[in-house]
Image (cartoon, rainbow over all chains, first blue to last red; front, side, top):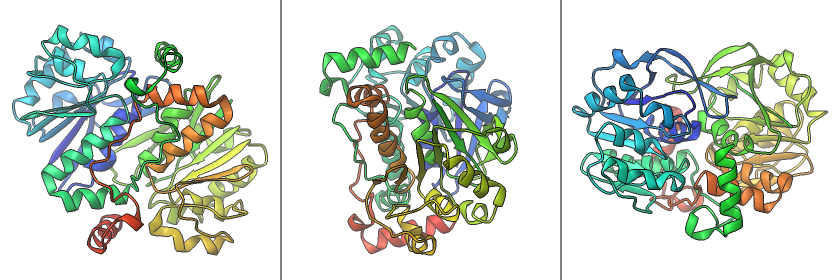
Length: 207
Length: 207
């Protein structure tokens, strides 16, 4: 089972690494990090690079694709090499998925055929691509799966793992990564945060 | 504020990337991924490499150190370059932290001076280093902070962010990464999992 993470400049690291840590444990998983060109790809902070071991042009088939989000989405939606690859690879995938603003890349490729979720900060862009924002953490369609912002990719990948390999297996992976979350605050979604917290988060997102 | 992630061969990616995604948003954060030698460092699955932009020998000071865990811990505890660097850098840090089996590396450096947490799978090794396992998700000492397995680094980093930059700021970062966890199962800790799930998780950990 080939699982491909197509990276691009200024993606958000956790969007990709959260699902990777889970999906890479699937039986028979063959994980490939790829990008338009091989080599290190810098994340949004500039302080971290993940290696793309393959060029997108070298990958003609994938069973699962996980598209991360991040501020680099803004440029990547106009990169026809990237978006065209998504469109082409999707014709043969079992699951084409996104985390965070990665949903906009699925949208740019014309793949959003129903309601979707994304990072709350970019939700108003979904209608541009013929979709509608659903304030859910994970939205599962026939073949398209979208997750909300950044950390939501973890919940998405565990849900997908249960579909693919069964609930017992997914529970074992959840125990493997000791995912028994105890967030220090209950402000992780817009509906739960004050205006002051929201304003501060927006400032951080603009930085 | 310099935040260093000392990597080593076969570390677990999420152990590092979870805390990175949060701590990198601290005001004035300067994040450095480092290793004994510069260059790509492969994670435990072999399918992902993160770039070490600096050699440990080039880093003489850090405010925060985050030591990831992973199966590579087993070799790294005998790597005097790595462990010696931890011992030396700790003399000047404000917070020296670990995620998952990274606690064993703090132990090998002689830095565990009280109860600590780690991945449940390696908890019996803590007494070897003069510590005792506490089945908590995050254990905060005067300067040493340990987190449980893999995903626990996210909770640890948010807790630390609140200490460093205040609760409002930490809440904004939590909203930024949309950390409103909705795990599909409630089996993310040993006390919550059946023996069958535990056995399957152990098989995955041995793979």
